[in-house]
Length: 396
Ligand code: SF4
Ligand code: SF4
Image 1 (cartoon, rainbow, N blue to C red):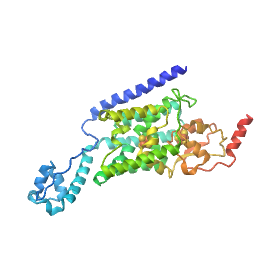
Image 2 (image 1 turned 180 degrees about the vertical axis):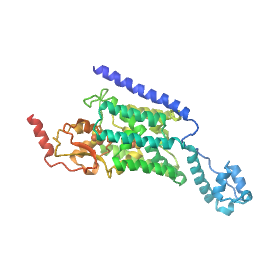
Image 3 (image 1 turned 60 degrees about the vertical axis):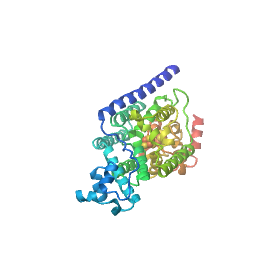
Image 4 (image 1 turned 180 degrees about the horizontal axis):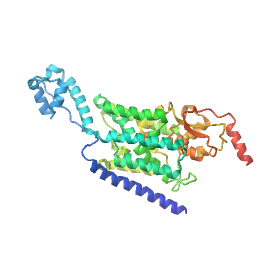
């Protein structure tokens, strides 16, 4: 029986990865056209006494860009010299900013993005209603995760995604000192979802998050044990320190050298496999194997949105809370929680409550229905609550 479970888990894992990679290659070809990543430009050629026309030709700049940067009124203005508009550094900065924005705009698929957000709303709202009615079981959870991966990852691609919006916003500002307004709208929507309902977008809608969660769940028995190997729960102090350090290094390297250290290892590229290099492939492969044993390793150890979302989550309107009047202190919820968060909620370790991914495992196992996902304020358990639970268990 045990061997059969192990084989089944290994088989599911392989089928999931092979199908995602294969179908994503197909999907990318069908969508075609837009690169979804802005083109990188070489350093601008600029010489003293150059006219705007010569500058445009030397750098292959379209007239529309020249017109906007230099505020040209007509053809004769192309003969004006660059010196009239400022120093070479000022002109380089103006043109770089304009090109960065134009490149961002050209890289986006403006049909796919609103469709994706529309579907995200419908999908997340449906799950919200479903969860409110407490109709979720392990099988339903897996089906929902699989649906999210298929729709938001395989079919609609990796872009946009919660992590990418924050990472690309920082990178663009760090390298070109500009803000791309549509990206800020997307980021605000993602953060508003966190503000409204915990890490709901991470739990059910994020392409990489749902994939890690599904892989973790296929290696889980009904008794919350690992079918293959052993589950590893890393302390939050460790995972959050690594996540903070990684975020700081990313910002430092971006602003100092203009290098995007996340790009090559971006786990969302599993939905864009043709853009993956050797390092990225090895990193993502290892991450997915680790997801069998560790709950959401990318989210906890590296994701910039995971970190920012964790901070916003502190003010979430709707979140998991426990009713201690009906709670019998059995702590089944803490055992079922794939992370350390339910344990922290029960103990009310206020300063370090880790990320809660609104996965509902805790509610699924609570024998008295004492856990809810609502706007109810989290309260402290009575001081002897868990001692009482131990005594009660001893008396059974
Ligand atoms: S924390 Fe995880 S689920 Fe949330 S955006 Fe990052 S990768 Fe996605
Ligand atoms: S089991 Fe409960 S407390 Fe733990 S992550 Fe899931 S919803 Fe949050």
